[in-house]
Image (cartoon, rainbow, N blue to C red; front, side, top):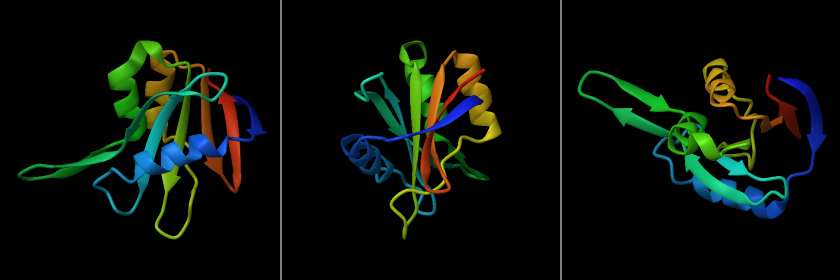
Length: 123
């Protein structure tokens, strides 16, 4: 990511992200990913899930689910993380998700880190 800059995310978008993150079956880290346009209108939303198999257990990240469902219609993705005692926690996408975001052709990523919302261009 390049050109990180702090931005103000509208409260209505954060409420949508919070409600979506509460739908997950993972209690430790509740994540949601939203596809938004330039005016912060929410186009699509998903949350992370835990899949439990017979011999193993793994999670599918919210960013991965959003890209899988709506790949061609996403320009900007907002990643939101809700932890029990905090409204928003650090939500920078992991390396695997950043690879998927780059491969999908998504141009911008918005995430929360160290108390601020950042918007970065994907390269």
